[in-house]
Amino acid sequence: MSPGTAASTSVLHERRKFCRRHEDKRSQQRERELEAVRHTREALFQHVDPDKLVEQALQTAMDIVDAEAGSVLLADPETQELVFAHSIGIKAVRIGMRMPWHEGLAGAVFRTGQPEIIYDARMDTRHFHTLDRLTGYESRDMIVFALKRWEGEPIGVLEGLNKRAGRLA
Image (tube, rainbow, N blue to C red; front, top):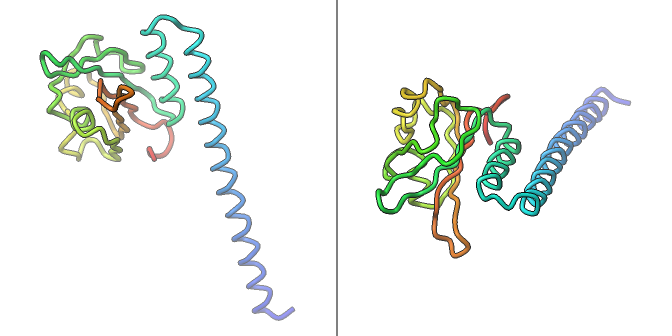
């Protein structure tokens, strides 16, 4: 075998190994997502308490993205605020704590209905830095998506904060 052929064969072999590893990672992600759907489905039939159901959905979302913390904020149309209804991993966030729905990334996602990912919350002008100061919790990266009624009307947002390893994707 010529040196050029050997090099080509080696490159091809490495490329196949890379593709297999990439496919394995995608397969593992799909497995986690399917497991999360199964847990959510079970929770729907297991919990008749809406608070428990929301808490289970939050935990499942956090598990999918491997987040350290997460919150569910629900809209209060009378005051035009988002109200912390559930929080996991952020000890200083009090249930009932409020923020204007026209501020912060949560407010932007609530208004547009479009999910957002921030890779560096400290540098993003949409991040509601007041909350970090009040709680002492440092938001590094975030994923936020709108919670909507069947008709598409937003009723709140779900946030995942600070991926345990790597970056949110």
